[in-house]
Image (cartoon, rainbow, N blue to C red; front, side):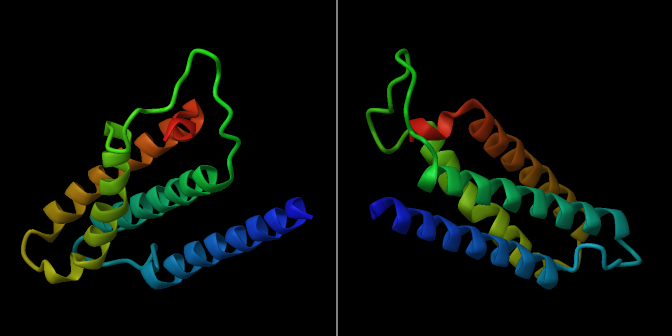
Length: 138
């Protein structure tokens, strides 16, 4: 009976994650073109969507993934390890960057490029964690 409720819980999380992603696409309107800074705005929005997709996959794996480790791997001794601290910053910086972007009128292209690079860095990092199964050590 516990397996049934676990599966139902997983389905609800998947539906919730998909809704979060769809609502983000609707709110961001990633291909709405700003005529003066078209490339940097599209790059920022697409990089944020890539980041968010990898973040949602990572958190799903963290919650429901198989956490069996190989014999030569052992979990981290402390909660505050480098991966956990990077994960904490990954939850904050890209989201803050996308929320406060309209407050920057001057230097907006530089702001967009900076946060595009940051989003892509977090995307690659989370993708690395998912593919290398480092998430199971957390």
